[in-house]
Length: 158
Image (cartoon, rainbow, N blue to C red; front, top):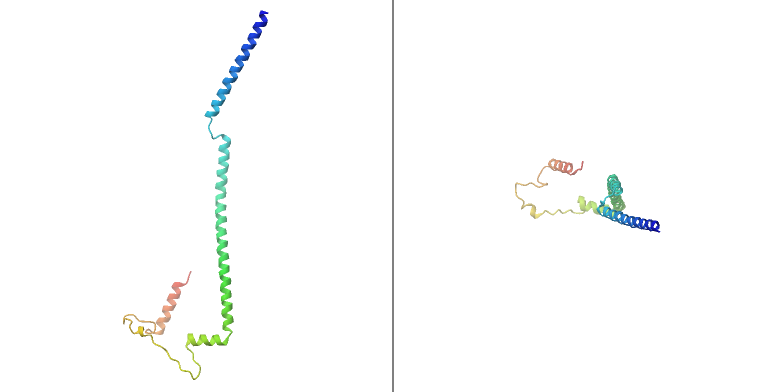
């Protein structure tokens, strides 16, 4: 019976020793996990892939947005051109009317019908202008023409 007891006590001791070892291993693993860095190798690789994707897609996205803005500008210009075409069609239709053309000739060109008398009003403020500055009517016609050419050249876009 003595041999039986030693075996039992050795088995019991081994069991206790195994439980203690298992508890130590468990504690060391939990401490290691607590000290473990938050950024693992997989997380670093994932972060690097995401950064690479962001950098790779930044230029195409900028181009896409730029092209969308260009398309919006082109559509705006098309709508403005269509509106201008409609205005010109309306003007063309008005110019087909002889009464409208006659009214324009009377207003802008000072035309009169035969037998009518044309009166031109002089601006009283025109005489009050200082003598140093000459108006368009006080200069020769060719000076006015060259001034018109110069001003048209300055306003013309390259």
